[in-house]
Length: 310
Ligand code: HEM
Image 1 (cartoon, rainbow, N blue to C red):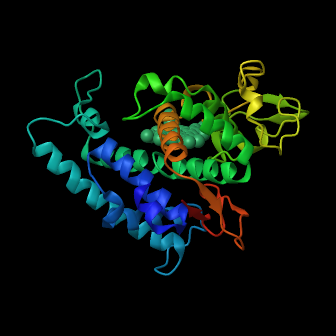
Image 2 (tube, protein in one colour):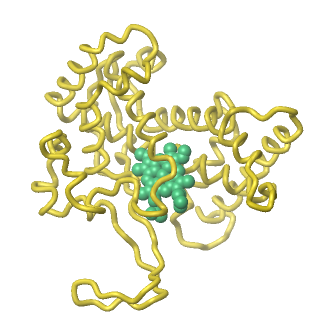
């Protein structure tokens, strides 16, 4: 934030992505400042090609993504092998995976470890970048709500690092963050295999089909979310608690057995980020920018969210 304050005007989205990538790499694989390494640029190219036409040529985004995936896996392999040679494992996600054993005492293979780390690094920062950038955007667009968030933070009188006690005392910020994830969910949806034939609104869905649940559309159900286009954190107030009204009615993190593994990690990081940002600075949207959302792979404003920070 101090760095941003010095720049005064900036395109925020790439900066926010560096920030979440640094947090993810430091907590998951104990690598600091990863956003400044090759790993970050490989990731960017890989993500660009994740949802593209599967034509593997050197100049297509899919081809470039495949090449970068290979490079990333090589980098990740170096990190893992290096860690395997150290006597004591660090207390991070990789450390847990290195020590994990199944019922028969088998550890994960190198290929499995590489795959898991790549998945965690992707899931652990791409979605969060979208979430905190949507928070920043929506706060700039709703100053009256931001004011209430600021008041709540001021009343906490946090002078040093945030404590876990402080984090429990931010109910209004929690409401706001829930509404951010309702209105602009970072993930589009998820796939499920039909295990038993069923009927839905007159359509017969056969066994073994793959179906997709859509998160943004679920969050637009007008029975549950009247005026669904409106950004309104009061939906999640203790009186309304709209997220508790209907099973699978509010699903930013998916639902059921395959619900997001990093849900609490994500909620924590969003809260700490929002609290720091609101206490340390003010920001405004710069004029003449395209705020239309690009939705793939995760929602973000077309021009990357240009702001003035002070
Ligand atoms: C605001 C941030 C995040 C959102 C909105 C989000 C959303 C989701 C959603 C909707 C799914 C379920 C997809 C499905 O139904 O198939 C999912 C799965 C998953 N997420 Fe997240 N996620 C976030 C952050 C994170 C973080 C920080 C991590 C890891 C540190 C993470 C790790 C995972 C993993 C590993 C899965 C797969 C779980 C499984 O298949 O069992 N996510 N996430």
